[in-house]
Picture 1 (cartoon, rainbow over the protein chains, first blue to last red):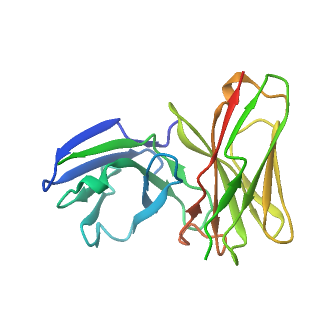
Picture 2 (picture 1 turned 90 degrees about the vertical axis):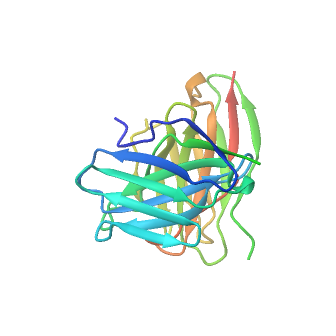
Length: 113
Length: 114
């Protein structure tokens, strides 16, 4: 049972354009969501998070949007840079629960120079 | 500060063997979580240790076990290895046991079971 789904395994975007990565979740108890970025041969690194009390959180070029009614979140990267090429994982969890993140299967973003 | 380190980085075992993986968290971090990454399933939570106690366990068979030492270093053990155990095993550390604390991942141990 995949509680968090990333239906697009890959995405290619031109440098300078917007990258939009999507994520859906099934567990309505999730109230905290995170995005991680992973380069080859490295562990995932934290990118940005959002609490369910918000519908948007922004950090520089990265913005995460949360649509609770649709159980959907998205990560926008503007403008996209070649160094953004990586695998992006979204994760959901319950804040008051155990320290346990439920990850999606990842989307490989390729930014073309 | 040094990051999370995992040893070994690569490992080849045969079915039926057992394996022990090690994780050294960032200094001062007391929570260590383990995840299994496979191509079809993404990252799946194995267990979390905090102050030498297992706080939570994912949906994995009892062949997967772990422990944490007083210096917060953690080990995970897989007994009676199966082909399906081939994966990248990642550990992550955080200062406290809260999902709102950023988890810092190590580079992982890639295990191949033949």
